[in-house]
Image (cartoon, rainbow, N blue to C red):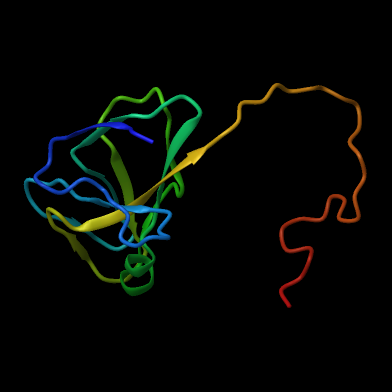
Amino acid sequence: MNVKIINKSDHALPHYETEASAGMDLRAHLEEDVILEPLERAIVKTGLFMELPVGLEAQVRPRSGLAAKSGITVLNAPGTIDADYRGEIGVILVNLSKEPFTIQNGDRIAQIVIAKHERIKWHKVNELNTTDRGEGGFGSTGVK
């Protein structure tokens, strides 16, 4: 599938690193470093603008290495980029560690996954079909 994209950064377009990768890395497009203090958040721009076909969305997700090693994650994960959005892709990053974290131009800051989605129509009813689970949620099935 072809997707229109404008790249105003000096970095390569997002691409799949391996044959079976679902996501493509997004890179920071910065004029100067961004220092995220502990518990601080910032929108980090990518220099990318795209035109997705209707029926697709782009999901912005954390990079596992940044999260595990440095406590840096995408605050609204997954962030959704709708097919009718034409602005620059920005990533809301948050520092959940106890140390400042520096983001430099070109750093891989998040990943993007393109996914199909359905549109629904609500059908109002007075009751729902029953299941074995019922209203159990928030850990009701246990941890082991």
